[in-house]
Amino acid sequence: MGVFQPEVSHDSQSSSRSYALRWEQVNFRVLSLAGVLSILITLIILLYVHGQSSKQITLVIDGKTQSLETREAILSDALAKEQISLQPHDQLSIGLSDEIKDGDRVVINRAQPFSLTADGAKKIFYTTEKTIGQAIKKLGIALEGHDKIFPSLDTTISANMDIKIVRINKQTVQRTTNLPYRVIKTADPSLTKGTVRVAQAGAPGVMIQHIEKIYQDGELASMRMVGKEVQTVTKDKIIAVGTKPLPKPVTVAQTTTSKTANATNSTKTSAKSSNVATKSGVNFEYKKLIKNVSMTAYSSEEPGIGTRTASGTRVTEGRTIAVDPNVIPIGWWVYIEGLGFRRAEDTGGAIKGNKVDVYYDSLNHARNFGRKSRTVYVIGPVKPELN
Image 1 (cartoon, one colour):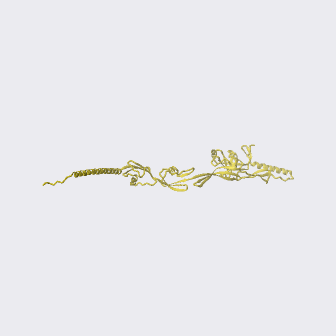
Image 2 (image 1 turned 135 degrees about the vertical axis):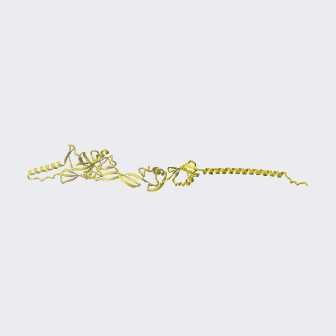
Image 3 (image 1 turned 90 degrees about the vertical axis):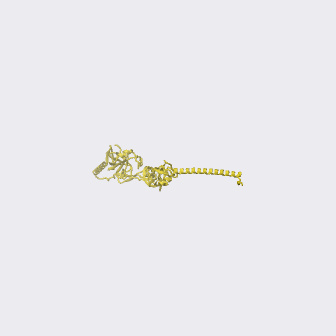
């Protein structure tokens, strides 16, 4: 009896070989994918290890240098780990989100707060600049003209410093003042005693003063006179006083009349000679004699002193003096011991009483004059001439 053998067909063998071939292709793909994944995982691990490797960087904080070792990749993380805090106005040489590398140098300038008072307002600012001048320049705050700042521009900025800017404004205005006229009495021999006549009517003068006003932050701080000029010359009032003796009644005795006339002439001669002086070869009569008069000097080269006098004349060396009109009338001539003839043409706020200010063109001569004491002969409105 024979053994039954299963029938093996050609199709069955072909199917087995096809299955094996497909399995081999799938297995190759799986292996390739696994290899790629392994490589990627290796690269990620290498990158992580590289990122976590130690770095040595240099920190410069407000000029002070220190070394920092870190494994952080970002600057902000490295500073946070070292507990280095930053304020909004601080300046960094690189960004907080920038990646740091081994050997990097990071500069941090911390901002200093300061208060600034200017233009009526007080504000708080922050700066990393070194001096006040650099700070206000960066803020766009300008100093103009005569403005002042306290402390000075070259002062080093410190925390919570108070800085003040004072705005200075100068203005020059004109001020009109009246110059009162003086009453001058003169002897008139053509008029009899007791007779008074107005020889010249008085008229006040007008002076224009140039006043400089200085304002600080809009408020008037000071003012001073920087110049003056006479607009209208003062015209003094001159009163003529009679000195002519009254006619005497005729007496019976001729001898008595003669004696009386001789006595009168002798009295006149004696009175006249008592007020006569001879100086520098000139004989002159004087109205009064003032001793121990305080003498100083001034010059038009001084600030605020013009070339016009209070009487309207031009200052002239060797002639012009400033006086107190209540002591020496304006326009009168005087003789000063050691100086000679001078004319009272100017006044001054400090010239009061027995004080005279002598004019010199040169400021050095005026200063060298110093203070002296002299005798002054008050003569009158007419200068004595050489006989």
